[in-house]
Image (cartoon, rainbow, N blue to C red; front, side, top):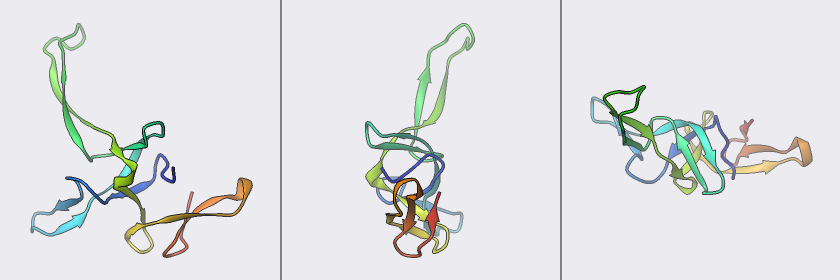
Length: 112
């Protein structure tokens, strides 16, 4: 999997693909990867794919509540965001062994 925790990614498919500002302009949704689940090929992106979770009353939380949490998204629905060209890009690996790094196909920007 070419996406790691802490990467900035763009959503390329699904209901969260675009965000609309106050003027009505659409832009591609971007966010930071909080968690990677390689066994399921999914990632959790900050502020994207929010779902409501109902919490039962417990001794600490007497009344119970409804909270919004980020749900996982399939990795095929996100692409790495390249800050150099300000768009989503494909990634290739360059180097061998311990010197292997991810590199943007478009701009030769290297990701850590």
